[in-house]
Length: 293
Image 1 (cartoon, helix red, strand yellow):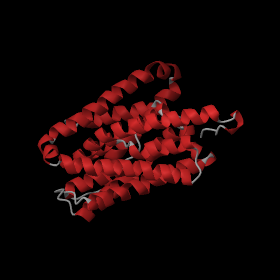
Image 2 (cartoon, rainbow, N blue to C red):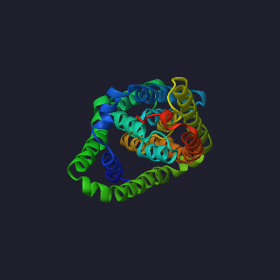
Image 3 (cartoon, rainbow, N blue to C red):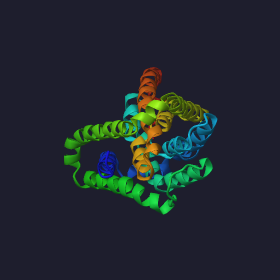
Image 4 (cartoon, rainbow, N blue to C red):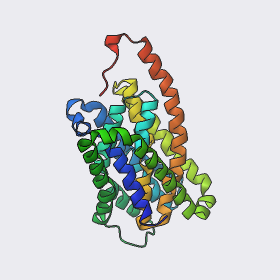
């Protein structure tokens, strides 16, 4: 995995996300804020705090601990949108959370990364500059996202024809990024696979369970709670891998292992919720079917 291929792969993933977005996905928060605000609060606060706690609980190596926090601070990913759609959840809410959290990542990811390096006293070997992380995050997330949105706005017909193809290519890039991250540090992964799987799986399951419970307690619909839970469980791990690789390769390992876990647990959760959401829609009176955000 080279320093050029990895950012380009992530940029393509973000362009594919941009092809699915409209300005309305960013302004929706002003009209129906409850679901989006709860989801963003979970992404910005709950997930990183859980990552800090789990890394401490399991006594992870400082570099792995920082990598887990980096993953926990990363925004939701396009895979969360897909799984929400398959789960018959509120896809519009999912897309909005992904879009907004991707913008906020320019601030939140560098801050949590610097905090984690300080808390765990990780031997990064170079001083963490918040600005030095902000610029790469901006370059490989916000700019490609804006390019994708611009393409959609100016070429709706082209987007309609080619967006599914671009999404498949982006998925292939995601798989290559994860495989490349594992292959680069295969000996380290093998030596610590048990603790890495345990820590990442704990983070994944707790994030989904707590966020789903909080959503239902806040009286969001089950479809909305499904979207929030998947957004918390299925991160943009490619971003965590890309940022980690800029500093030291060991930081990418937790995100790579998490990627495998989240696809399994997220897929199972989506399948379970698809049945529940379908049943709810089937038995609810037409007037009682909740309006999607």
